[in-house]
Image 1 (cartoon, rainbow, N blue to C red):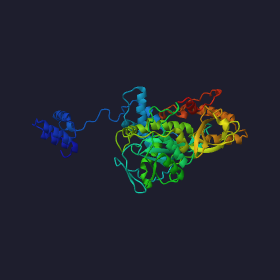
Image 2: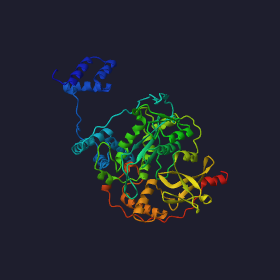
Image 3: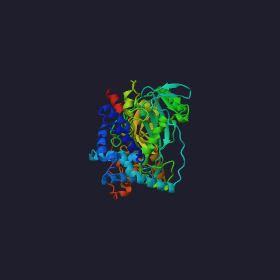
Image 4: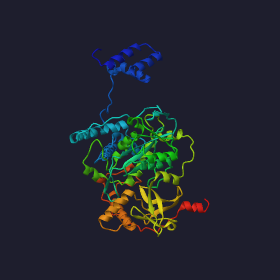
Length: 540
């Protein structure tokens, strides 16, 4: 007996104690000792009677070592992993498992490889990849920092020593900036650089309630734009629209940030005072885990799967990253919106409960007063500039000509403009009346009513037109935009569009040559109406 495996000796001793005993309690106790189900005790006794000691040994499966996953699924798993890690992109094995589940749902197959099966199939592939990385690159150690408090400890301490118990949604919002680990291009394919992402997080639910994505450096003005997005209900064009509603909005009681100059500026203090928001600073930088954790999730689950991804720890050759970059700022923003609304906010936070972040936000939302009107928020939170109205009733801004209702009567006057730098085809015009600014009209860039143009792109276009010694007019800008759209359509025709899911992005090296782009359609004449004024005129 001493030469037998330990497991066999224990099973033999327990079964000998059961000889001649018919009580169920004794068999239940035996099953507990052996870590087996009660029914397995009967089967083990039967094998012991038939085969003796041999019947107590653990029986190997006849198909041990063989993969029971079909070849089609194995090919899909390996192909998905390789495509997700081509170039500078990075995809983890857990992301592959999620894509397998999503692909099975699309095919209508109730059975598909489990997460453990996916990990087993990718084990050799991952080991080989790690060996190659160790040969090519030297990994630099990353600094570790705390991600903030865990579990249900709902309390924060401000720099002033005030302790705030987190009890409901929209009580405390947190805001921070990061430079996204991805390169974006303009619509001509020229690299603009890495955009900056600003997120606003609800402390109670950990929902992302608002964002701002742009090429501008972090500042109080960028923070205000992110707050505007968080405060107002979310509305998007069809190409941006996620499957789930991004329902988080409202007005917070506190805004909890670090001590950066963008959060301690006089401008932000004035805005917060007008909105009734109390600004509080973190006691230590390490206490920003709640707002910083989503940045890591976005990098590992979202940016790493897209072309143009560049990691901070492993620096690939810059030319390789630039060659892989294909997304414009607008396309990236649309994908981020869909990821947050359809994925991130729908997932449970690991430190709170199994309830999704979105459900948690809704379940403990206290009744609030009406949100400030959008035009009032524009005055506080949007970018602003001043321009003179020309006698012809038009305004020049960013080398573009804007026209709007009622501007003809303000020739020679200086007006205030409010605009979003992500899309300057429409600006809001205000006139000074005493100590207040009164909304006058919307102004639209002539010939660009159906387009979307950011301030950064407008400046880049102006530089190119000046370099080519061409006159900068709305029509020349429009022509340049259309030519670049044709170029990008030719490059991306067989990859993806803003309507596609991230999971559906095809690899450019495996596609056929794109079809020739269709000629641009003529732009119809568009008459601009001020709908707010029309409603007032008709008493609506």
